[in-house]
Amino acid sequence: MTLGVVCHGLQSLGVTGGALAGCPPGKGWFCGSPSRPWHQSRRALGLYKPQDICPLSPGTMQSLVLLCVVLALSEGFTKLPLERGKKPREILREKGLLRHFFQRHRYDIGMKFPHAFPNLIDVAAEPLLNTLDMEYYGTISIGTPPQDFTVVFDTGSSNLWVPSISCASPACQSHQMFNPSQSSTYKSTGQNLSIHYGTGDMEGIVGCDTVTVASLMDTNQLFGLSTTEPGQFFVHVTFDGILGLGYPSLAADGITPVFDNLVNESLLEQNLFSVYLSRETMGSVVIFGGIDDAYFTGSINWIPVSYQGYWQISMDSIIVNRQEIACSGGCQAIVDTGTSLVAGPPSDISDIQSAVGARQNTYGEYNVNCSYISAMPDVVFVINGVQYPVSASAYTEQNNEEACISGFQNTSADLWILGDVFIRVYYSIFDRANNRVGLAKAV
Image (tube, rainbow, N blue to C red):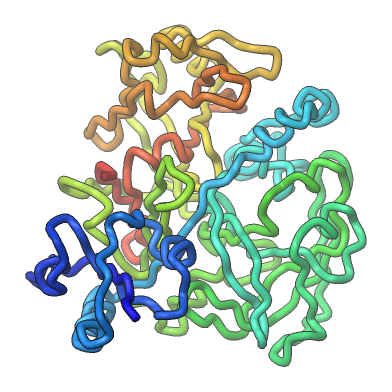
């Protein structure tokens, strides 16, 4: 029997995996279970291709196990792999339902941020309509024995919620639902949860149970269990719920967020987390308790948080072709893993779209000529005196209708949202201990 093994990060110990294991140049090894098939190991690591793996004999494997343990302890952080799936927007487009959705729903990603958009507060707290442009998600478990759920790790909100087994709505029935009676550690709080939004109310309850995030076990975590999810749109969402990574001040009903409980329970070495988003289906990761320099190059630039609710920062300006074209005189921006695009005020977004040659389509999106992408200019975000260029290949994407779409979108008021289009280019660190955001060029 032989095992394929890759141990990422050996260079930090001054050892190369291939040399130590006797692998050919360019090959590596990882610490994993002998019984796990390759596709599961790849899902867990999110980094390696089958051809990168070097088969090892059991004898060699035994000599490497201790080193793997030492390496894991030396890293001092916990990685949770994320998968990049289709955005609900794309699923609706493929099913011919996107036009119908926009006819029935007012969609403004700014509704997700009530503190920044006070005029929209009546519809701002709705956590489902805002999933139209979410595309990265990972797996957590709740209860004992664990019940698995696919959730979006969202820096733009602070609550954890999943569907309940008592929810009869079609949107719940098409997803994993939590069954309290199957968990020996579940405790009822007797607390109800009602979230109002444009087309009705999402009713639910607040429960308490053990939440496991990667290898981290968060005991006595309060979370929302939806019992009603109205509307047909939510049937098409590919994930079950949302795990918010914003500040506690955003959490409904004063519930302590999952990340804060992980810190309070001394489960993390550092009071921060970091995010790497890949353009591929696999390879993305959220890292709890640390920073992994394997995901970025160069130095980390730190920006103070200007509002401790969202991960909100001050931005100096936006430049295209060496000309300031938006955010003139400075503006506020939110670094948001739960938004796929970059959003901003309509007039500024219109100026950017014109500068890059994008034209609006019937869905309110902006198309670009796929043949011209290589000649399109960078859009440069100036933050805390540092320029962060985003190339056209990063801010455009081809959909299944063979059209190329601009990654910039209108929103209300003056707030900017730096979503996945930006985060894919810049490894992002969310430092709660120092109330700052770190950005470094992603690999």
